[in-house]
Image (cartoon, rainbow, N blue to C red):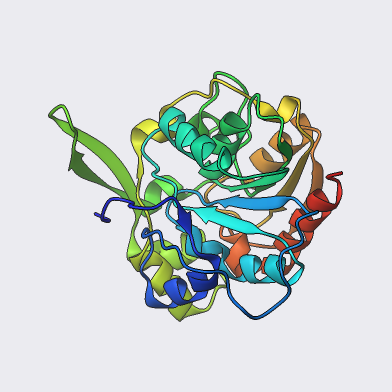
Length: 277
């Protein structure tokens, strides 16, 4: 199990190093890098939320590209314990960010941003990267099962952890020998191996928990469909994007699209950011 998160945000300047070392799940903070342009205070802050079986370092290359364009960027570590509690945690992070925000979610992180952004007027755009976009009452598992094609069930194993009040909770991890094929097909082997070692497990309860808010009904949305996704069926992604009336792009990418195809991911986020006035 990973050690408890002691700080909220992951220092974007250290993300690449974290990815290389496979130290997923630990949050860092440090001064902003001296190189590159100073952040443009007129632009929105971009907050990147990772999903299950990943950590904030999965945004590493996207972070670097956004920073080069003058954006302030945050990539918090998501607990992955339960939808309501995860959304409340992210909302607390957002409350500390001044000015307008573009909120980006990958995978299960899409469920989190849909709930965390509800009744938050400073969040001006939502960006979903191969992510869940649940309506009220829908869970991530229900949306996964809406269309055939996911092979996640066969690729995961269950492990158990103690609950604070006693008993055990169940969480899922992707088997290391299947991680690249399932989650990051096309990503360099060494990178995929490091991702597998540092993956963050998600509780079954979080995947089963129904959403209680759907911020995408009021906030403009963008969506990247990953056609080679083996976690969320691409047909489900297209359906969710259409229902949300999201500005949609389609990329031949695996579930870990921000790692395999950071260019299209960054471009979509920048399009959303340019819409903010």
